[in-house]
Image (cartoon, rainbow, N blue to C red; front, side, top):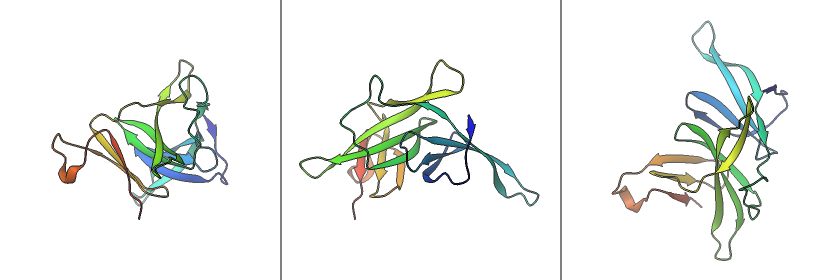
Length: 154
């Protein structure tokens, strides 16, 4: 892990399995893990930020049709995950790819692997960088179904 510069911009943040992560603003593949401690008043403070070494997504399994417009960071099954909103389809619906962060065989090197199912979860995303993931029971309230992405366009 490399330390981050103070000028590095973050487009989205999420707590994943008790750790804070930030998705970098100008690279949909960049991810920062923050170290958090508490100060003398018991308030949480960020004490360090480390850029994770991540292999490029354009290797095997990457979807070439995803031209990124917005990326969303969230926790899925205890791991950092991101939804990448791509170009709009002909029927004016957004297209999404979902990727989960996994460790490679190399120490401290990670990669984004495409997720083909959200399982028991539904993902709700907005036009910018807001998203929430929720576990959905078999009989979801309001017609909400598991393994779906809901785009909330105002």
